[in-house]
Structures are given as C-alpha cells and as structure tokens.
Length: 433
Ligand SMILES: Cc1ncc(COP(=O)(O)O)c(C=O)c1O
Image (tube, rainbow, N blue to C red; front, side, top):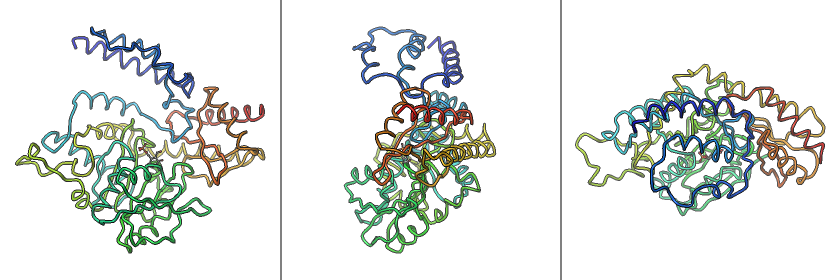
C-alpha cells in the first residue's frame, strides 16, 4: 500500500501507452484457446509480489491474449469506446468503493445516478418524469423490465421480433415464460398483426443487433396497451443516437414505452459496463422488486435503487457517465456520432458502387451489412482471412439463411483511412479466393 502512488503512476503510464499504441496491435487476439492458461501458475502465490509484476505480466501474458476493443479498426459486433474520462472515473469509483444498496449506504451514488441518468434522458429527448437507473448490461435491464411486466400483468407470455436480441430468449428462459417470435417484414422490422390478448410484454427493438433495423414502436405500443400488455423498447445500441436530431425519426412512439434500455457502454464513450433502464411506471417496478429484509430497515431511508432491479449491491457506475458527459459535453458527443454515421455511409457507398459486393440491409446508424457476390463459404472465408490478418475485425450474421458480413463503427479513434483499409483488406482477401 505504501507504493500506491508510485504503482498508480506506473499504471496510468501503462494505460496511456496502451491507448497510444493499440492501433499497432492485431485487432482480434491471435492466440489459441488455452494458450494463456498454460502460461499461468497453476496455484495462487503464497507470498505477495510487487504490483510492478502485474504490469510486466500485462505486457507479457495479457496483451497477446486481448481482442483489442479499443482498436480503431475494431468493427465487429457493436464497436465501442472506453474514453479517457470514463477510464479515470472507473479508477476513482473503485477507490471510493461505494456499495449503494440503499440511500444511506451511498447518498452520493444514489443521487448522482438519478441525476446523471436524467441528464441523458434530456440529451436524448425522452419524456420528463421517467424514472431511470443503471444496470450492468442490457440483458439485465431487459430481464428486469420483463419481470416487472409479468408481475403487474399476471401473464406469462413474451413477444418479440425474430430479429430481437437473444437477451429476450434468455429473459424468457430465466423467468419461465413462453416466448413468441414474430416474423419481420422486408425492412427487417417486426410485424404488428399479432394477438396480444394473453401477453405480458412486447419487446420492440430500435437498432437490431444483426441489422440495426427499427421496429414500429408506436404501433406495437398502441396494440400492446390496448391488450393490457407492457411495451419494452430495446434501444441498447441505437438509442444513444437520439442525441442527434436527425436520428430521432427512430424514436417515434418511444414516448409510449413502459420501459426502455440504452447502453452508454455501446455508443456513448462509457467503459463497460453501463446500461440505462428507464420506466414510465416506477411504482410497478417497485412492486416487482422491492423487498426490505429487517437488516436493511432504517428510519431515514425510504429510497433504494435496488428496488428497481435484481442486484442489491450496486457499483458507482454513474461516476464514469458523469465524467464522460462533462468532459466531452453534448456537442462533442454529437460530432463523434455524426462522424461514425458518415464513415458507415462512406463504407456503404463503396459496397454499393462495386458490382462484386452487395449491400444486404438498409444502411442505418453506424452499421453496414454486406456480402461478396458468391457463395456463403466464400464470404465465411473472407471474414476468417481478414480477421486472422489482425488488420481489422468484423463479424457476421445470417439473413434469410444467407451468410452476411457486418461492419460496425463505434470507436472514437476510427478515421476514414481505417475504413479504406478495411475495404482494401476485404478486397485483397476476396481476390485471393
Ligand atoms: C439490441 C441489443 N440488445 C441487447 C444487447 C445485449 O447487451 P448487453 O451485452 O449489454 O447485455 C445487445 C448487444 O449487442 C443488443 O445489440
């Protein structure tokens, strides 16, 4: 502990160097399964070591086994950024180690969380008066929302699009609910002609994981409510884009939602993990989640964020979001997202202009879904080859049974040159097939 300052300076120096040089590392980890494990001592140390050994082993053991999510040419899944203010705030949150089980256990964490989530609500143009709090992931947020819906409706059926995230399947499985998947239309948006009379909750997605398609939230909300069902909106990725007026078309009907999830750890520069869950029905959430055992009863303490979700002990997650919002400011965040969307449009244009390639889904937000003209095997091989090269990392999905490639932009350091390099790498590997 006496070396805390010195070790701390060295750790920050390590972090700064990593961020400066991450663009020179392979994007996708180039190790085989078990390779790291084989290098680790089988048993824990009996005697303590200096912290500098940890930093040395980061270089020697850990970095080679990293898939570098901070890399400017990370284009797989949904690309993310852990920004510098967010990184530093995580260090400080661990330093203060707040366990915000209820208000008195951490007035600061409880009140800052409510306040900062409300800042985001304002930035995104969401209705006043919604209750928002932070969960770890969208999977947990959706689980919590569906659990609240089941509790208040007394029904046991969950409905979502065939393109909804597997978090819906997992929530249904964990809660023992029946899941009904609705086919999507030619725009990859969920159909609305569905009987909801015995349904607890409908999940509408704004920005599906595979295609960034947008479900008809308004119509689904109206139908759900007419049938006595709950409407949960999963905008885990794309909801952050509502800081841009020009992307608010995708918010149509969201004001009718009973709950909504958006992940700042996806596209709002916040380090993993930070998922925002709002509800227009906070009393129903409390009914579903509030449990106060005797050891938590206090005279002054009516308020606990643990009454709105599964976890009792809660991390000081709002600190990093606060730091990101303050150190960037809304206008810089908007500029970063506009640039990501511009780069995605640029890449989509390259695909469209080349007869060897095909755009497979309408280009939305910062995602491009495409494939090489040819067989599924050829596309699979191209993906494997570019990823193996370490130059870029992209992922895939299936559309109508066909193998398609996804390029998602979300890292703050990604430039036009990186997009061109991705395009060149894809063409180089395609020509070699
Ligand atoms: C639309 C959508 N919902 C939910 C999730 C799950 O997010 P998390 O990893 O925070 O559980 C994702 C992840 O990509 C997503 O794209």
